[in-house]
Image: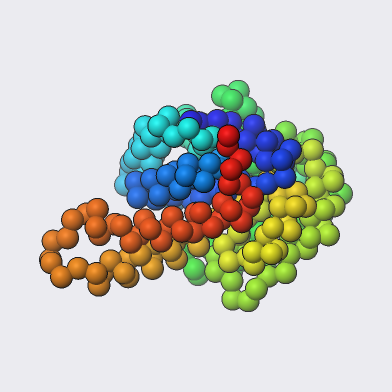
Length: 287
């Protein structure tokens, strides 16, 4: 069942766990994530990226959103449909019009005042429609999705957090404490002391981007110190690739059934989804 982003993360903050947020496209990913979350009795966030939603002349919106909206009421766990990472207000408007529960506006690479202005504009678009907004303060770097450009991290400053939330009206805040997007070349070291300071200063739940590949013990320390949502994408992509390689060599016949071809992909993704749910202490949170 669809629920609000604000309520979901509020429950996570009150009960000291984090909600897993998975980027997804196509039915195999959606089904694997939702069925696994339901089995684990965990809330879950399904995220879409603009690059996927705008494909094929805009058909990404129709297929991605239509599929999710058609199946969510068949699952008795809280589900949020979330637009991930954009600095495009037109994309925010489109997500609101298509029925997203929440949106993420990312002005983190801009100076503070410009970030505030962009984020506040997104809130102004989303709030009248009952859509919640995640902003970002500090900057989570790492590789872009094309694997061609790497950006540096800029850690979030505690003395900016309260001011940012008050001036923008965001419902959740992504912070930079040492993670990075994409696949790590070396293990990160999260700044847990900085996170504790950010959590103490923030009136809204905190979000960790770049969750793929971060050591489990550091992830759990981050949850204990205030992280209420963690984004996962690269780990899911790697799991699906493992499944694809298995499927490519698994059949003698030239026309295997689709359910058999997709089974290894789904199975590998389900393993990752279950691992992340348990890692974040989200299993069993839905009674």
